[in-house]
Length: 450
Image 1: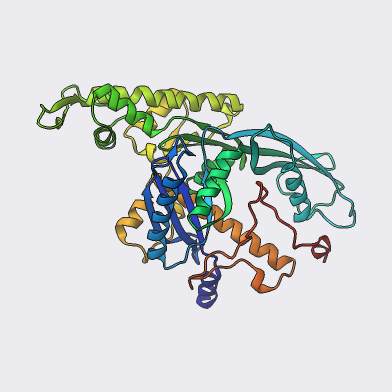
Image 2: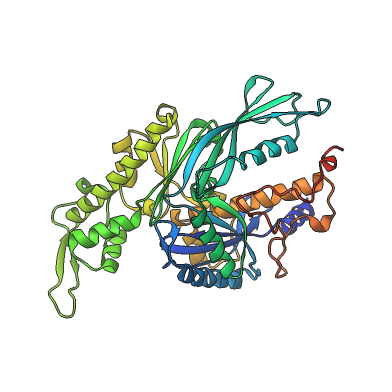
């Protein structure tokens, strides 16, 4: 038993997640442990100077940040990082619903994975508005021969296969800039993953997704939102405000330097002014011998509360427009760096009337003897929900490709397994050309029919 466990760990693909955020660039290297948890082998982070509101604004600075973070993660994990799963966010992200239909020619066999892949492939051919491209095609419910509400049609007999799809698109220029940054850093993009989807993998349970839940990821430049119901993603949105908006408000409202405003927010900040006493005062050093400035903690909280209320109102508007407001039994899960703000869950409950909690990515993490304890403890913070989520999504994709390779009888060397011998993911090299995620150049139809 132990031998098979250790063998499965050895064969578990090593995957890399790259979170290019507004405040930090984070690289995580990991694989699945023998107990199904995520074992982090290395983590590197660097300041993100070239990203504004989730979109790359300066390629050179972003590339420098990626290189620094990759070097740190590579040294810590002893893995030569070459292929990465990259997160994408930004105000340009849009989502739409679409329906696809496939009439099967082979009536003697059950519905197979290739039929669903064909439906998904057809969705990638949708005509989008100029300057937009499809990033994700996510199947929702299927209908087989007019029998609706089927979650997994594989193995069913049927001629006409229909599906509702949640399609996520983004600006071509924003997508190309991210891929260019990754390429200029000497890396290859395995897959682009929408950041709220990644965060949901690391902080939400299957029960919450089934019951109905809203994930709110408050980052530095943007607040990402994803709504799940009956285990299916129903709505996604990106709001162009985040933790940096709060810092700017403090800088202007309290007339302090930006770095002082950031410190005030993280050390003394609160999302509810009523929770602070009138007589609590913070003393901020003056510039070049000037008198120190005194700031009331309660006034600081008023400034923060005003901006956080605005962000939560935007979130609530998206919840209402999704049509799922009355179906969210599990309420709201807040994650991202902004979720660390004191009293935020109470403010969210007050504005939306929905239960809320802070989402931590630690329940998916395996016990770790590789990383230094401070690094491992830091990874449990909501700030790293996206980075760990990208890792989980990458591992799922690698295992899926491995499984399909085994199923259609590809030679073992073609199955995309990575090991620690300075060889990163041997995954599809051309997987992300013009937004297509399903490349079947090397796989013929007859290979499926066995």
